[in-house]
Amino acid sequence: MLNIVFYFQVHQPYRLRHINVLDIGKKANLFDDALNGQVMRKVAQKCYLPTNKLLLSLIKKHAGRFKIAYSITGTAIEQFKLYSPETLDSFKALADTGCVEFLGETYYHSLAFLYDTNEFLDQVAMHRELMKNEFGYFTETFRNTELIYQDKLSDLVFEIEGFKTIITEGVERILQWRTPLYAYKNYSKDINLLLKYYQLSDDIAFRFSDRDWPEYPLTVGKFVNWIDHLTLAEKKNRNQFLNLFMDYETFGEHQWAESGIFDFMQHFPDEVLKRGHLGFATPKETFALSNYQQEALSFPEPVSWADEQRDLSAWLENDMQHNAIETLYELLEKVKTKGDPQLLEIARKLSTSDHFYYMCTKYFQDGDVHKYFSPYDSPDQAYIYYINALADLEERLS
Image 1 (tube, rainbow, N blue to C red):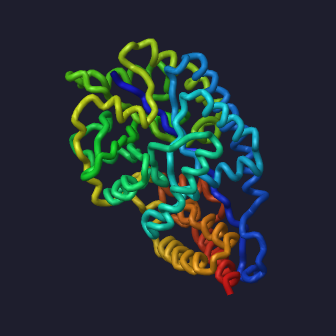
Image 2 (image 1 turned 90 degrees about the horizontal axis):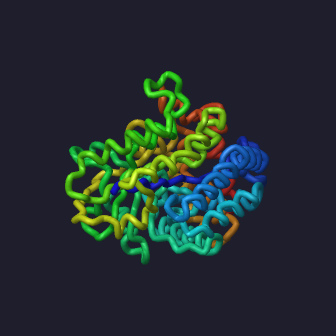
């Protein structure tokens, strides 16, 4: 049996205002509420609301056989409440079906794992509480920000009660001759590892509407035939897992409705479920479905799902990025010592990984993707506004 594991990332950061040197010390709002509201309402109309409506109908139609998983950041939930409460209601309707898993992560979509273990654990606990309060859901699968993973992450997550599975990127330099179609375990603990099958995931997320792609147009029949072909090498009746992980904004935002992406998703479960050896599962279900001795995988260096390198370079490649994030975590310690909850909230919003992503100076295709997401004219501009925001926060400590 091959089970398709659909996982969608739902995230919105708090984008900064254009903060200049003269703004430092004025204690004005650091975040661009107008822009954040505009983006949230636009993405809600183009992606969240129509996609949630479609997936809810598919779950009901297939009576529990179609299943999906989300990770929704704390900053996204907060902005749902501010700018699109109907979006939050639509996610709650999905939660009520029992066919949706909600994953654990850092509340602020931060890189705290790399810089501050205690802050990382605090944010994971905050996020778990949020999922319980909003959806009545206890998280059992963990995904770190942008699927960042290395061995020491599983050591940390293993110590947090209830987490049994971690999802990350299926990187060739780790897998080597292996396939991401099986569940693995981490190098030393009994933690289930699911690896993204990035080729087929990216066919939907990035190439779906690319008319220069040799396989354009991507039809449901063609795609399911490719999936079917993956099962041919399995001769021992071991359960396989095709992990299709992507940004939720793939639907309607990155791939517009005019591309046919909603029609594709409408008919995809039908085509899968008519084949008796294909089905759907949530990440946590794979723990029990792994009917074989799982091989241990070691990730000595960090991986992620970002850019061609699939490492940390999307956030930590140049001097601006390193200076910004190191300054942030030095300041975060001072903020915690101060004990002001409002300042701590500001500092944590500034820990969101997107701020460092906007400072990336890569070229070619990776650079184009960074520019697409950035609200600023250049990486230098993103850095200047961010450093000015940190300077303002430091002024508030005095």
